[in-house]
Length: 317
Image (tube, rainbow, N blue to C red; front, side, top):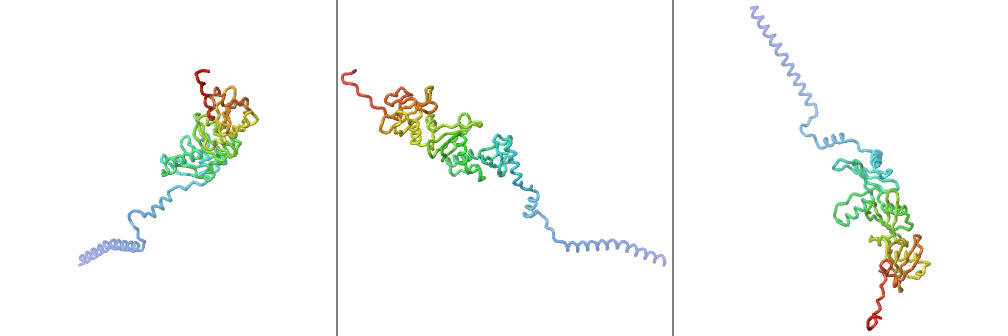
């Protein structure tokens, strides 16, 4: 009897020890479920667009400050031959080749657009404006060409008027434009004057030169801002004090130069034209009437030569 009772107690104890861990596990799971019910729901799947944008903004580097842009642009300009001291700079962006592009103002001097190539490539705002003008004339519907937009860089005429002063042009400049490039690689500009004929000017190294439009025409160039009347008035001033001072010059041309001087032809209203020879100081040395100047540089071209006298009847005189 005692043995059966002991066996029953042993079985009961074994059952209690076996059930206790299971009950504890069940209670733990139940508590975890209650905790989970109290937590906010977590959405599984792709991150929302707003969250993704927030992550990108957090990863993106801070935009450079105006001071950093100015310093970086000056560093690039220091590697060019422009001598530009950057007074203002604008970050324009990146190219497909991963270079950076800046626009810079250079104080009182013309500005540039510079690309961080090796070495940096700087394009003058004056030349860019000229190129854009040509592109618009060729195709008005074409996308706009790159050009400068900083306010200090947009008054191209101001820079060209200063170029005229630097070249020694003493007139009042009222028009100016870039003409192109000369055979020696220098950039050529035309300036017009409100009080006389204009000039072509160009800079080689640090030296400016000027060419009067009457000479440009003689060399088969063109001047848009100088009229026939302005050239005629200029030659009229050269004839002052000479025997041709009374000539009312309506047209004039530069014929050329040689060791004896410079030769101009003047067409005179209501009178025979003349060819004038001047020295290096532009003082008249000699006047040749067109009627007898056929041997001077091929003769007059602006004055109609008188008709040849008819041969006398009966043959030779």
